[in-house]
Amino acid sequence: MGARGVSKGRLSEQRTGRGLLVIALALIVVITVADIGIGTSVHLGPLLVIAPALTASFAGPRLTALVGALAQAALLFISIFHGGLTTTNHVAQLIALAVLSALVVFICYVRERHASQLNRVRSVAETAQRTLLRPPPRRVGPLRVAWLYLAAEDEAQIGGDLLAVARTDHACTRVLIGDVRGHGLASIGEASVVMGAFREGAPRYDSLPELVTAVEESVCRNLEDGADTAHDAGEHFITAVMLDIHDQGLQAEMLNCGHPPPLLIRGGQVTVLNSLRPAPPLGLCGLWVRNDRSDHFTLEAGDMLLLYTDGVIEARSPTGAFYPLVERLAAFPASSPDALLHHIHRDLLEHTSEQLSDDAAFLVIERTAPRHLRRPSPISQPANLPRLHPADRHRLAR
Image 1: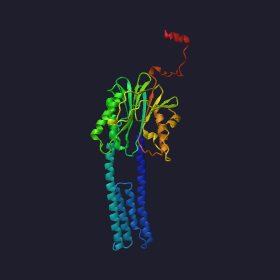
Image 2 (image 1 turned 90 degrees about the horizontal axis):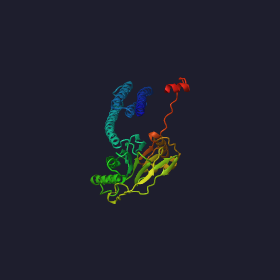
Image 3 (image 1 turned 30 degrees about the horizontal axis):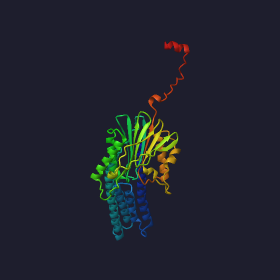
Image 4 (image 1 turned 45 degrees about the vertical axis):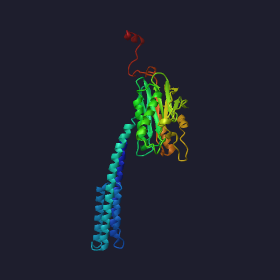
């Protein structure tokens, strides 16, 4: 789907470029014919510079130079037709057109070179961002997972929001979603520290409070080593929610570190999972207080859990209204995690007129029924086979 979209975009650009090239060549012909037809009273030859200038807007320096040479040849033809190259006016027009065409070609060359360098840098940045934000698997144990990331900066695929899913050795899925203070490329470094510490610690620590403490210690070590805390002391912090969802049973655990509460969707009803034992945001270091107890809740088969960042609920409409996530969520059909994300994504962009001021991340988790409780798909008998008489069935069984 993505490759098909890119190919369609390239074909559209090629068609547009061909159309503009035809216009540039047509301008050379029209200006030349008009100048010869009007006579010497009005000089339209200097307008030929429009052709190479128009070509430079969609083509490279070579094609621009070719169109400039054609414009120069057309002006030379006009000059010869109106009395030759002996007049000062015609010589000045030829020199001016040559200088302007050369300047346009040079600007086109510099622009193309800068664009090539930018594409290389962008390719490296996109690779680094994909490596940092590794997509969670669509299926983890008994859970179905879907996620969506909307970066506020156009040139970034990710920013200060973070999410990760990891498995432990004791049949448990651990989930992280968080938000680094600020947004865009400047906050990617701190987001990478949190996700790296989570992925390393998720299989090592038995309890959720121990994992959160380990992530906090890792963040503080990295802030002391790399952050400029002399100018922005106390400004580095990360809100986060970490979850433990066990394969067996219906119990799940949550430890909220100053993050917007998750939303539980069950039977068309939306429940806000407010924490009874909240912890402070990560990265406060000396001000951070350890929380040794987590919140417990039930996640039944068919339930969906929506985790999100504050860029969602703080997204504003053109009139300044915040996005009402809980109210909108109750009206969406929750047939699957992917379908739910599709509805939220479309509705959020409509609410903000596609102008996000902050990064926004979503993570939807659905617990599926155990395999031994799922209904087997009915096997229909082919219509072209004759039905067996009960006596025949008994004889075949024997």
